[in-house]
Length: 463
Ligand SMILES: Cc1cc2nc3c(=O)[nH]c(=O)nc-3n(C[C@H](O)[C@H](O)[C@H](O)COP(=O)(O)OP(=O)(O)OC[C@H]3O[C@@H](n4cnc5c(N)ncnc54)[C@H](O)[C@@H]3O)c2cc1C
Image 1 (cartoon, rainbow, N blue to C red):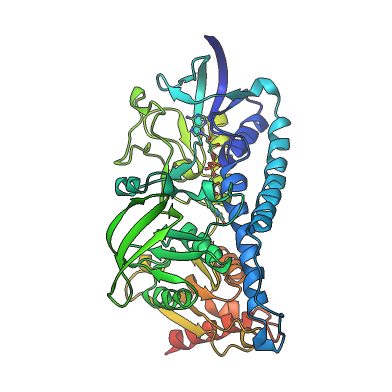
Image 2: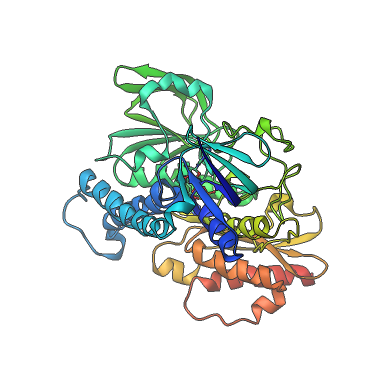
């Protein structure tokens, strides 16, 4: 077995791992980046980018089919060519992956190691059966994987996860999606708009990441108008029948229905990739899920000079957070034991459904009861939204009742991805509702809807 002495060993060459590697090297340390799976990152290969490519095709289909309200008629039914749809998704996806691969290739070969790493002790790693690494510090940046509840195994080879969708050559006829979280809603709606028969089933009533009951109810109704969505489904039976999955369930009217699907997409959450890392061989303190206990500011784990970043620590499983945390982990691994808090931006999350959803700052569910006011706007009569025929949505902005400071927002509605940025930037600046209302608003724009919500909050702060 080959042996290697190194300052910083990084497990996982995803977004967090790559950022950690660059940061450690910038401090003049020796570093090695260990990757067991394919290079290219989850985001580019099977995550953010291919899902948005599929959504882009779905939006094109939707707009083509809904132009008549403007007096614009596309002759005949919209024809969707599944092979062409998937060829573009895969082709563009491969382009994005190509950029990442070029970045990886620019890393000196001696700093890259192929294989799966596991801890032998606090700072000794074994990579497959070929290399033993003696590191001063270790960064765990192993990402996450779909967590599939055991009963879903009844679907046999009809059961798929998001990765599988993006390798399809063409679109199937029918897909049942379990889990109306971000991934399930984005993929479910996109497939539905591309002509696939889709049913989306959930448990407990959650819709995306929303925590404000009014926004969540609006979201459920708005999305249900577009595709079958039951966030609290009653599933009676599920198994594989021939080459199809069979599901017997109570529909939204309480009637018993039995349907067959080409595939069942499990979008039932993601779990950090910590199993198989040999963490039991270390003195790291582990939580109930087997994830090392760590300081969210410095990402230092309790019990050893080990840091954990990105989806692996599961606190904010988003791309920009993985990049920021990777840098923090790499910086701190390099300067250990002199660790420092890394950059933590105001929180921002977007769901690329239609209408889009967004959450900024503190979630409604985490606000102090009685300590805040809510400003509201409906987008149903909002000028520019109506002009464009996208006048569906509800926005809540939350403000501190004592200081008037903007605390957070939840929304489903038009251009939520853009409003989320305005609001997250305001949140990070610590602005009050009054200061936000001093900012310019052009006319006629969707941001005028945001102004209505801010004015509503201002009135409530005064009243
Ligand atoms: C369908 C989907 C859509 C998404 N859309 C968005 C979006 O729109 N916006 C957004 O912000 N986020 C989105 N995300 C989330 C985002 O993709 C992730 O937060 C981000 O990619 C996590 O990066 P990471 O570096 O933590 O993990 P990864 O990029 O997964 O990297 C982890 C790497 O570690 C490797 N590895 C694991 N174990 C070992 C081991 N023992 N030894 C060696 N290597 C190992 C893996 O092979 C992998 O390459 C989406 C995710 C999915 C699945």
